[in-house]
Image 1 (cartoon, rainbow, N blue to C red):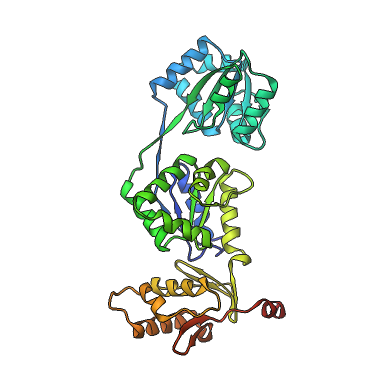
Image 2: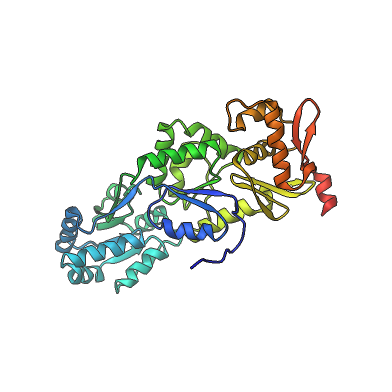
Length: 380
């Protein structure tokens, strides 16, 4: 059944999802706002349901119950309980955890604890490992046995902090990261992003972000990606500060929603791309160029690749003249010439339906007919 679109906020936008878990949910949410979505997981999630190490660690906890259990993710805690059930350890695990202080890193982890028939003693409302760490260190952990159910990478620093404060720590990594299902597709996605065929990239895990950046570096696409992100031509978004860390290290400042939820991530992207600050005021209305076309005066206009590239090149320097020579590389044929540029601009004007939006500057090139601040104020 076709789902009715909620808006055209992302119409003409290509959004890349280098994610595995819940990519279908994310795709549907973005498509309802008009986006075209490419899914190219940089890593896969490998469940530990049959993992010998996880079951061995669980048996150890049953013999030596922890004083504190930290649940960092809802999906991870549920998967651990399911793994214990398959190993015939479910009843004993729940019995042991009933006498343990249960600390949840956010509402989702608390919900998973409740689903198992248990009650969380404390919840980190900021959903950060740092808040969990600070709370337990303030309570005092010296001499205590603390079990930590980690997210996929396990790189949250909790074990190290508790051990340094005198505690014993047992680590439980309930799912781990595996290689991408299609490494060639991941590298291709980095090249598409660098060349301007992608408008936004969304990340939901730090390991996934790190691996995608590594693929971009291997393909030679990373410098162009960093440059496009810096100029605002490319939106890169991360679900939370932990996921954003590898991007920050690469010189990219991603969009991070206030709450670490996929819904909040989608809403932030829709608001940022579809919001008025991202648009140019022109004589024909607000203009927002996108990889698949443009939104002009509230109406989405599909454009060919070369037409969209020309429009974005003009929009990169609002009101300034862009020479024919600068536009030549945007044409598909290697034998492109000045006449071919004139033809391409004519087709762009025809598709936009507003001839004067792209003005010809005699013997110099073309420019967008943008309004200055005073004109915008008068128009409003």
